[in-house]
Amino acid sequence: MILLTRKAEFSASHYYWSEQLSAEENLRLFGKCANRNGHGHNYTLEVTVEGEVDPVSGFVVDLKELKEVINRQVVDVYDHRHLNLEVPEFKHAIPTTENLAIAIWKRLENQIDGAKLHRIRVYETPDLFSDYYGEA
Amino acid sequence: MKAYLSRRYVMSASHRLYSEAYSEQKNREVYGKCSNPHGHGHNYVVEVTVGGQVDPVTGMVCNLADLDHCVQSNVIDRFDHTNLNFDERFSNEVPTTENLCIAIHNLLAEHFVHADLERVRVEETRNNFFEYAGKGKHGTSSSRS
Image 1 (cartoon, chains in turn blue, yellow):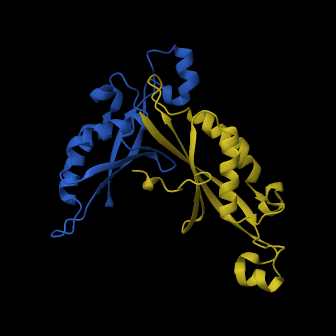
Image 2: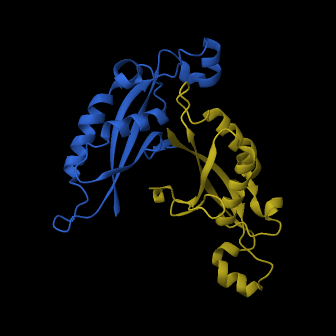
Image 3: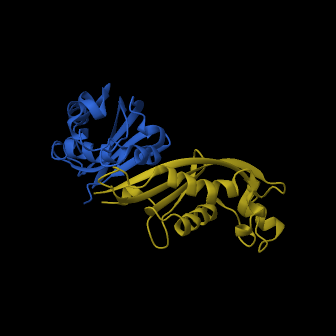
């Protein structure tokens, strides 16, 4: 079994605010991320798949196909969008880095021919990132 | 659903790799220029990974401000702009980056209560880094399957 990782980038805006919390609690918990006018990041996405190397092609997956799936399922939907306002999965869930990793996993799971999704890593900044392995 | 959150911090410190158990010559053989008598320094990058269930209300594994505060007060405030050889943790131990990584893991394991500490990675330079996930655990998250 071998792991293969493809990176992609997207730029998006978001804010952190839970309707289940009071305004004071939101501000205390989320700090400047709770500013309702939003703010943005250049996100880096790493998609890691696992599989066996095909003895004929020498590939785990066709990288071009993987790139197309990532673009179609994730980048085209998230890039230059306001995540809270324009992406359906964040209508009720806060677009934290953790929830982004989980949402991207769900968007890509079972979409990649010949390989299994191993890990989704989302960098919000170079110093902050979240990993999801599909764990319950 | 369980997710993992990682955060990188920077601290600058000096150290000298020198063991009292070795002769001068043996220290020179083992540690090379790292045993130069007056020490030298690094900009260390400390990468802390915590894991846990994503809270359905906050969407977070833990509050980043709590993690920042814990790492700042227990690790950065202690080691940044210091000579590691003079820290009591290293009074009987060589402050290699392996030992620093274990020391930081132990400090955070003791003090961080808001999520599970999964791994500490310390980069001494961009080409040298060390990982510790606790006794008997594998330090590399990519080994998870």
